[in-house]
Image (cartoon, rainbow, N blue to C red; front, side):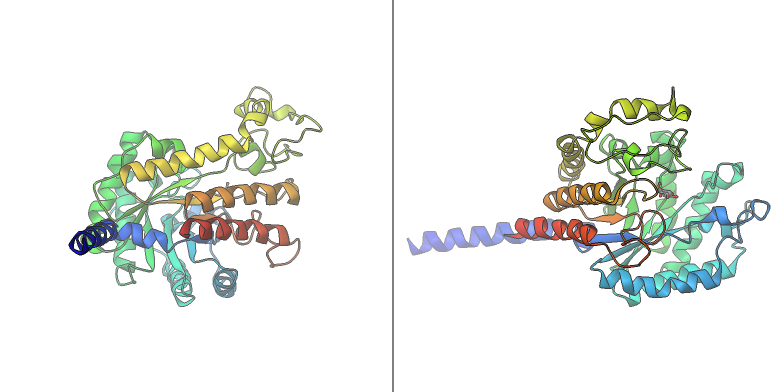
Length: 382
Ligand code: GLC
């Protein structure tokens, strides 16, 4: 009998250790990401001059003001900061693709340094390589590969436990195959220089959730896969001037669907996809459906045994009511807590922030939303 018990104990021990051993580096690093925050500023290429290839968009004084924000993010309970950076504005359009703006690069270096100094995981996210699509050479894949060759060179000596590389934000106007090819080419050059850094990789169609679950992981094992989740889009982007006709004038969309009054379709939205989504809002804003969306992402990660990270979600505060924004945040945080999906809110300051109006303090109901993630996660551990 004693022998039998001992035998079983050894078996249990062996299976437990093999489960632990099976966890990849990417899995272990993803587990530490937990709650994340985007710190937007070095992606604001539109503040620059087009004839200068937007290269002058970032201002040193403005960048320096953000130093204390990293501490603020840490203090608010976040473990990860995603740093969107438009490196594209600081590199020549033509071969041999030299850097041409040391000032800009220094600001990027500082952001990464400040993140690490504040004990945050930093994601260096290559944002807006294509700008507004008005400069065709900008998004030439050969140039993007060269951007990464230089970015990897620049950050290869950072701690791979603390600094991750996100290959490209929201690839769009590109087929699944073309993006896959480009991503593999980028990986080849990055891996030569930085073999140990974790890569964060999303898929074509704006880092879409559907694009991810329709795709297969890459061969490289040290990757955390990413998707963005802005559903229901007409709620999260009402008032947005950059995301489609009809949205700038759209207001009064509540979350979940308001039983009181139907959403008024702005004239500018007539006949567009925005109108289609307005008509389908009841279905789109259904929390059961949304939970299923997120669960499908988690199921994909389990099926392929790869970690995932929801790199952007949030809502624009121009017209959306604070109550609705908080309900939306609470729903998504509760769901991602239950499903154990790390995420990064878009964004710390600017139009998607979580602050009480006119302050830089997270509002009470947004704090409750954040707490709901922690609560659900703590239940998983039991
Ligand atoms: C994407 C865009 C960013 C925008 C955000 C929300 O990250 O790059 O500019 O603010 O989505 O729409």
